[in-house]
Image (cartoon, rainbow, N blue to C red; front, top):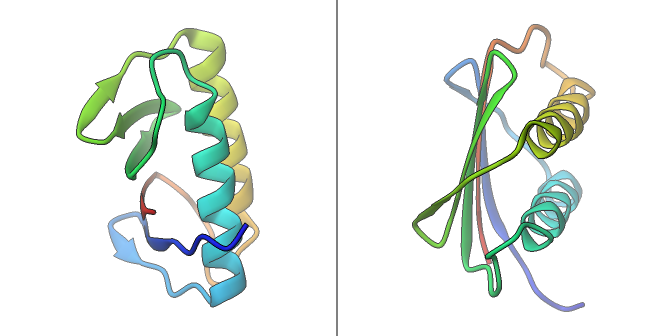
Length: 100
């Protein structure tokens, strides 16, 4: 895969600096999760907001409905990944935006 992604990460409304490897890894995880959702085909941009274990997903400007399992799977995966980054401690909310 030769695609490159632009990604932005905010934790508790504060921008988190991420290196190229983390940007690509996080972007590919997010893109992989949302492409498996019903009704999602080509992904140009994704926005994920997580707060209090509630997940809002927007793909190509369209809000995507999530069932409880999918909500929890995305919340756990993304929060777990972000929690391992240097400088990230308590996560009350997070926002990820990825542009392909």
